[in-house]
Amino acid sequence: MTADEVGTATHEIPPVVAVVGRPNVGKSTLVNRILGRREAVVQDVPGVTRDRVSYDALWNGRQFVVVDTGGWASDATGMAAQIAGQAEIAIELADAVVFVVDATVGVMDEDEAVVRVLRRSQKPVVLAANKVDDPRTEAEAAKMWNLGLGEPYAVSALHGRGSGDLLDAILESLPTAPKETDEEVGGPRRVAIVGKPNVGKSSLLNTLAGRQRVVVDNAAGTTVDPVDELVEVNGTVYRFIDTAGIRRRVKEATGHEYYASLRTHGAIERAEVCVVVIDASEPVTEQDLRILTSVEEAGRALLIAFNKWDLTDEERRRYLTREIERDLVQFAWSSRVNISAGTGRHVDRLQPAIDEALGNWEKRISTGKLNAFLGRIVAAHPHPVRGGKQPRILFGTQAQAGPPTFILFTSGQIEAGYLRFVERRLREEFDFTGTPVHLQVRAREKRGKKSR
Image (tube, one colour):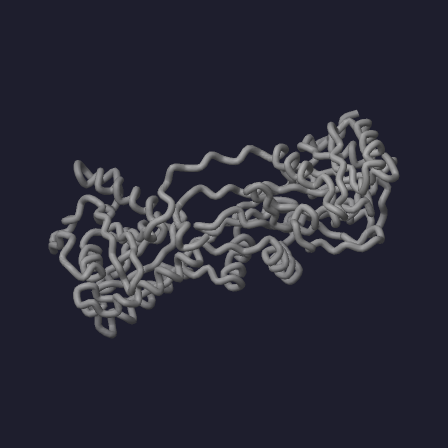
C-alpha cells in the first residue's frame, strides 16, 4: 500500500485454490498460466511436482492463493503415496479446487478416483479440460461432462486458450468477498496519543504542533474529548489524536469520565499507530500495561514514549530498565523513545519511530518467501510430539496487513508455545518492529468415516 492509499479499509483474507489431477496432465503449466508468470517447475515427465507449492495470484482485482500439487494416484505406494497424500491435504484445506484432466486422452481410471475424493470433500470444483490446443480437440473436452462435475472448461495451459473463462469460473466458485467498510482511507497517517491521566500527552502534542493548541493543566484528566490536530513534522503531515487519560477501568469511571474512556478506546480503533505515553519518573503501573494491551488487541502499530525523562536520575533509570525487562517483556517488539515533552528533548526521534512502525504494520510477505521460511523452521525445529501425534505446519499465507496477519494451515492443533516460537522467528526474519503480528491456525479437519 502506498502513502496515498493509506487507511483502515478491510483486507480480504485471500481464499485458497488447489490445482489437482493425475500425473502429467499439465497442472504446473496451468498454474503458471493462472499466475501470468513462470513460477511452477514444468517438465514433460510425471512427478516433477512433489509437494504442495503456494503462489499469490490476482484476477479481475481479486486476490487468491494457488496451491500446485503433485499428481494424485489412488493406488500409489512409497513416494507416490506421499505425493497423493499432499494432494488430498490440499483439497481438504482449499476453498475451491481446479481439477485438471487431459482432453487428448479422455477420462482414465485415475481421473475417476480423483472425482471420488473431490465428491467426499464437498468443495466447489472447476473442471479444466487441458491440452485443447485447437478446435478439433474441443469435442474431446465436451466428453468430460461424463465426470459429473459440471461444465468442462476447454483450455490450453501451454498457449493460454480459454484461460480467461477458466479464471472467471474460479472466481465464481470462491467464497463471496466481504463487504468493504466505510472507514476512512487516504489522507494523513492517523496517530493516537494515549496513556493514563497526567503523563504529558497534551504537552507532547503541543510540542509537536509548535504552538498552544490543547488545554494543558497539571490536574489529572483535563483533556476529555479526543482532539484531532494536523501537524507537519519534517515536511510530513500527520493527524494526531490527543485522547483523554484512560481510567483504571471503564466501569469505575462515572459521568463524563465514562464517556471519555469510551471515546479514548474509539480513538485507538480509529488510529493506525498509537504512541503510548508512560511517565518515566514513576514506576510502570497496571494501568500502563492495560493501555498497551488495548493497543495490541486493537491491532494497531505501537510506539512507547517514556516521557518526563528530564525528571529521572541514574537510580530511577536503573529501576526503569528492570521494569521494562520484567513488566513490558510481552511488548518487546515495540519501539521505545525517551523524551521530555516539556523541554522538547528527543521529541524529534518520534517521527522516524512512527514511520518505521507504520511501515512494518503494512508490510506484506509473499507466499513464496513465507513458505520457504516456514519450511526451514519446521525442518530445524519440528513441533513436539504429544500423545503420539506430531502436528505440522503444511503451508501458510498472509491474510492481511495492518496488522500483519498470517494463516497457518496445519495437520492438527498447534501448541501456544510453538506458535509463540514461530512468531518470534517471523519477527527475526522479516522485522516487524512496532507492530503486533497475529497468527491464525486453520487445522485440517479429521476425516470422517467413509460412507458405504
